[in-house]
Image (tube, rainbow, N blue to C red; front, side):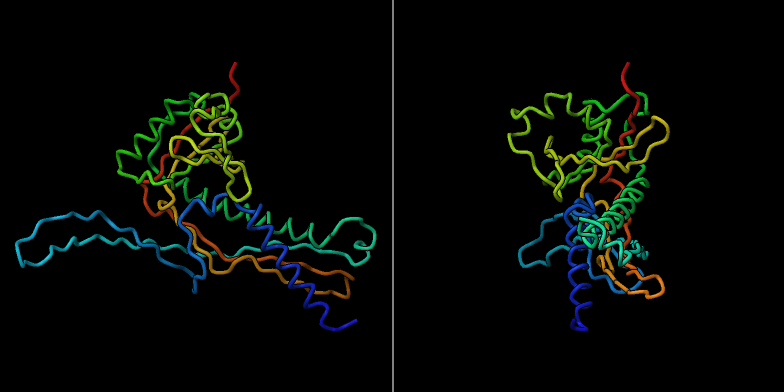
Length: 275
C-alpha cells in the first residue's frame, strides 16, 4: 500500500466535514453579516451612521455627509470537536464510519456557530411581549413596527428565528401557511425548510434562550449581527499505535458580535401549551 494513502484519506475526510458543515451544520451563519479569512485574534465591523443630502450652489463644493463610523470589534475563539475511531471497529460495522464521524464533528461545530450568533442576539435590548402569551400576530406586528420605526431596510434580508413551539403557533396562522399570502414555494435555508412572510425569512431553531416557559425569539436584519471566521472547519487525523485507533480532530476559529442594536428585536414568548 502506498505510504501516501493517509494523505488521501485525510483530504477526503476534511472534504466530507466541510460539506456536512455547510449543508447541515449551521442554520444562522448565512442570515447575518459574515466575514471569512480573518487574520489575527479579532476583526472589526464598521457601523456607519446616516448621511444627509444637501444642496449646493452653482460651481460650489459638494457638501460632505460626514458619516459617523463606529468600529465594532469581534473577537475570535478557537473550538474543537474530536473522537476516536478504532481500527478493528471499522471492520465490524456496516456503515461508513469516516462519514459518520465527519458529520458528527461538523454538526457539533455548526451548533457552536449558531450558539455564538444566538448568544450575541441575546445582548439586544429592544423587545416586545412579556412572556405571558405565545407567539401571535400582535407581537409579530409590534416587532416589525419597531424595525420600520428604526428605518431598518426592508430589502429581503430580514430574518426571524423562532423555537419549536412558536413554529407550531405560526403554522396555525392562515397568513403564514396559505399560498395566498406566502406563495406556493417553500424556500430552503442551508438545506433547512424556511418560510417567507411579511418580507421576513422565518427559521426554526432549537437553540434559542429559554428559562422555564419563557422563550426568546428574534426578528433582525442581517447587518445587525456580525460573524467572523479566522479558520473554516478543518480536520486532522492522527494514528495512535498504542490505542490502535485514529483520533479525528475537527477545529475552527470563529466569533460573533452585535453591530446595530436598532436592527434586532427580541420577542418574549410563552413556551407553555395552551389549555
